[in-house]
Length: 88
Image (cartoon, rainbow, N blue to C red; front, side):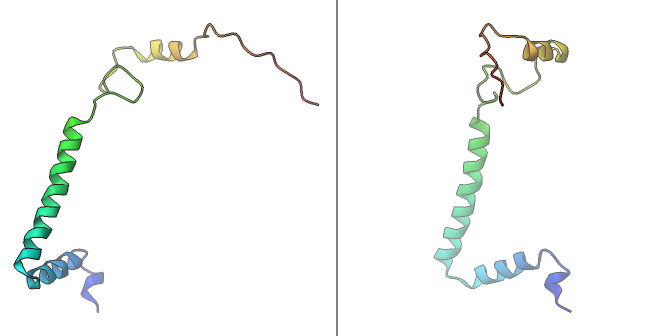
């Protein structure tokens, strides 16, 4: 029976063994690339705006109760509606 179908981490071990056989410079470069990606993701998440797109408020809990927010969403605007045309 093939052990890679049983152990889902087997490819990680195989990758680690292959990396150990590579030259030291390649090993260091690979580790630095992985660290750069992880650090970049952490910085990106930390510096991301906390608001929702198009909103001046943060993405946290809303200060407007749900009933008021629903009433605001369904409130008519001051824009006149286009007249309805009947289709044949």
